[in-house]
Length: 80
Image (cartoon, rainbow, N blue to C red):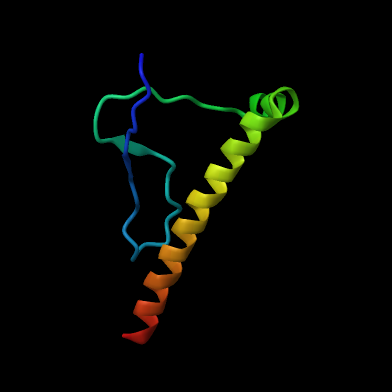
């Protein structure tokens, strides 16, 4: 099985509600998903430091992009 880039669209609650958002996603095409528990991540980080570093770097970049986007949306809402 070759590597493919799979995009997923996060499911979000309407912004007008105060309900917590779920962590569900909708796949745009068929894909396999894996759950990495904290225990397994800690093992990975201990045994395979380079892989853990790459994973954490990608997660940090994704969170940074999402936070920047959220900040831009909030700024637009405040300006209106």
